[in-house]
Length: 118
Image (cartoon, rainbow, N blue to C red):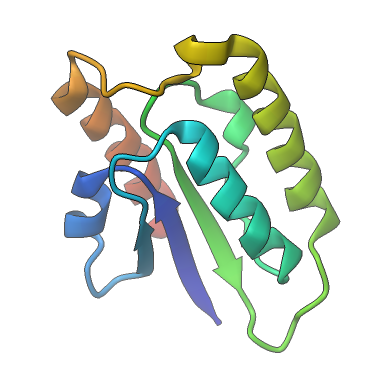
């Protein structure tokens, strides 16, 4: 059993080195992160946080992965689909460009991930 984090936040990758497996999607939008997360959920990974609660460019998805489970996690898939629908409806404001306050937003995202991983 392991923890996997799918993110577009470089601070998360740096901070969690050795504590979790981090999949960094560098310079990817939050929608790209959600799509990658959906692939993980389809392979049995279970979300440890609700992605619909956090909006913005930086997105980190924390998964619990039991390698003996390969069936899709329906709850995680449902949450990710809902979040992707919301992000697509927001269009360009969903975050295709890195924001001006990148450092502050990266730190907020990192704090959320830290609270789950520790």
